Amino acid sequence: MQAVTTAPPIPTGKIKSFGAFGPKYEVGKPLRQLDDGDWMVEVKMVETGESAEYRLTHVYDDPEAR
Image 1: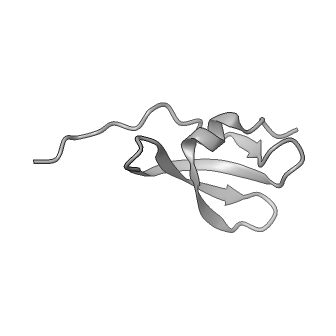
Image 2: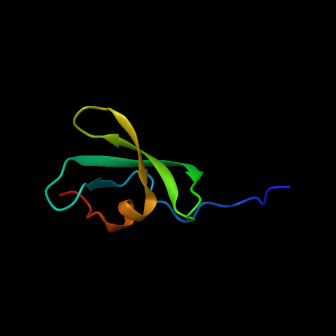
């Protein structure tokens, strides 16, 4: 039987940017836990509306958009 895993706190709805000068994205819902313990979350690009998957550890590292 597989253990039930709860996602860590996710800043859903926050607008962040890929690095200091990258495009802005909105943080979405958790999608799945990875083998290394990290999580994939859904992100939506602010300018294009495109959705993508992104590692939660990268979300934590990225700055809030200005």
